[in-house]
Structure formats: structure tokens, C-alpha cells
Amino acid sequence: MLSYLDVPFQHAHPEVLKRMKRPANAEKVLERVKAWRAICPDLTIRSTFIAGFPGETEEQFQTLLDFIHEADLDRVGSRIRRSRARRSTNSTARCPTTCVRSAARASWNSPRNCRPGA
Image (cartoon, rainbow, N blue to C red; front, side):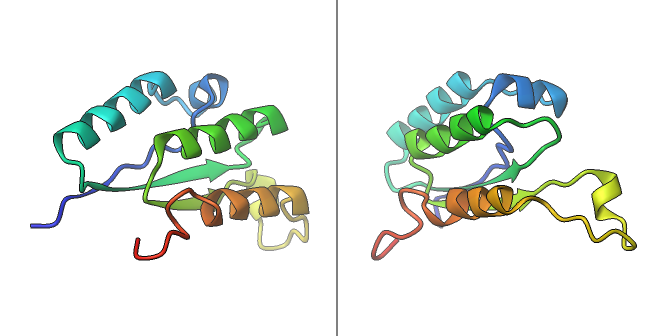
């Protein structure tokens, strides 16, 4: 049997989680991840996060990046969230380049995503 969890944490900053209407608390999630790893050291944990949620600041995004590194997740995926107006097929507006780069950085630079043999 494979020791694998896929848990969509979505974000780590409390204000962003509140706007998302998510009850999660980053500190409790980190405690849970550590407990899981204590029980099963070979556990692989994958998660997905939403970058660019409406109103997200650079500081809040940095909190998310710090969380990803502290949680020591094995695999990380990211989704860029755009407002409904920007998602319209008739709209040429796009998520700012910094948002796209930041989301990619979160996904590609996860502590274990680039680890040999991971």
C-alpha cells in the first residue's frame, strides 16, 4: 500500500482563508502534517493552493510560500484565481505577470518538488 495523502490546503493566510470561507488554520494544519509524518515517516503529501484570490496581497502570498516550505510538502500544485470579469471569454485582461510568476514559483520551488528521487 502506498502512504500518500492529497489534501487541498488552498491557502495559509488567515484573511485569505476567511474570504475563501475556509475554516482552516495554518498552525493547526502544520501540527497535523507533523503528526502524520511522526506516525508514518515515509508519507507522501501533495496539496494544491490558490494564488491570486481576489484581494490577496504580496504579503499574504509570501505567507503561503513560507507555509509551503515549512510544511515540507512532497508535491505542490497551484491554481491561479482570477475574478469572474477576467475569466470572461470576451475579455483580454489577464492575471498580472507577477501573479503568474508567483504561482509558478510556489509550485516549482516546493522543497521536495525538485528533490532527486522524490
